[in-house]
Amino acid sequence: MTGRLTVVDEIFLRTHRGMGTPIALQGLWRTGDAMEPALLRAIHDRLRVGDLGRRVARARVPGARRAWRPNIQAHPLDHVDSPLPETAILPWADTLGTDLDPECGPGWRLSSAPLDDGGTVVALTCSHALADARGLIHAVAAALDELARTDDKPLDAPIPGSVSEPAPGTESRVKGRYTASSDWFDAGAQWTTILGGTARALRRGIPRPPATSTPDSSDGRALHSTLLTFDAAEWDATAAASGGTPNSLFIHLVANILWETGFQRPEIAASLPVDTRDEPRVDNDLAMTEIAMDRSDTPATIRDKARAAYLRRMSSPAGLPEEILQVLPDRWAYALSKGAGERDILCSNIGTLPASLRNVGTHHCDRVAARAIHPGLTEYPRTRLSGYLSRLADTYTLALVSLSCDRETLDAATDRACTAAGLRAIPW
Image (cartoon, rainbow, N blue to C red):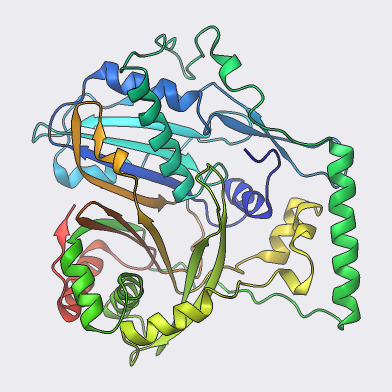
């Protein structure tokens, strides 16, 4: 595991502190039958001593990056007693991002609720400072794999309270996971990179200010989300028939949903996260790129634009080395990078989920989704619609988070855009 926070980690840490749009990642699982409490506790205990069990520690030397430290305390397993109707799943899940603290307390929470159809919904929610979507999925897969290897034998039950305490002996399981260099060594390496990169930037001329985006007025804007599933074979066939790929069809669909909500501009700018990890791990291991689209674009033309965009990345602030954001005071770093990654839409293709997520113990998960939520949102960003696409077996799941319109408008716009694309959406 990486012992120090990356530039991306610290950007999300600042959003947690209110400097930017607050973001928490969330995975949702549905089973068709009731999941026993002992199994949920076992999953919770393995997550607690897994890779999400960490916190941010401040460096003591100016210029050194913040470090990761093990944190095996956790919020207790959160369980709803009264069964939820299907229409209440997302409103319930939207509330689970509160009290997540990647610095001073647990940065994640495992929650579950029975459904009135006899099934169960499980939600894992974590601060974006701890992990990105692929990292969250890796944490869940690792916990389920560990559970299978130990024959479903739970660890000692946590002590009830506001924060669950680790069972004796479990701390030794996570010590040594992070191998950070000394603060003095890290500060020296950081300053060498920053001073050298700044000198090179200045030799090319005075750097231009970073391209930032200005949030639209929050008047009349609202936050709503929806989850839809699609037959994977049908989605892939539709993409191929239009000369595109499953990913370019996804981007095309999200853009057209925004236009169908009444978005007036003739061009839509899309930010596209790029997974940069070379192995499965719990980290914010991503970069951002962008494309611009107009109404004449098709999945085929978006395919070409996206392929070119994935070869480049959004630039660092004012052409300076991005590490400069880690040595400046937080408010200065926020001001320098404010809005730099925000565009009209966000299209995050999470990819194919591990097959291990299809089963939790003896329970089959017929629906799995991954998305972001925005706990405590008070100021709306430029982004008006975010889409998260994932695939599990023969199903694609599309999670939409609208930051611009009411639910009825979003649902109607989604129906029209799916019909125009030749896609049949099924409510999650």
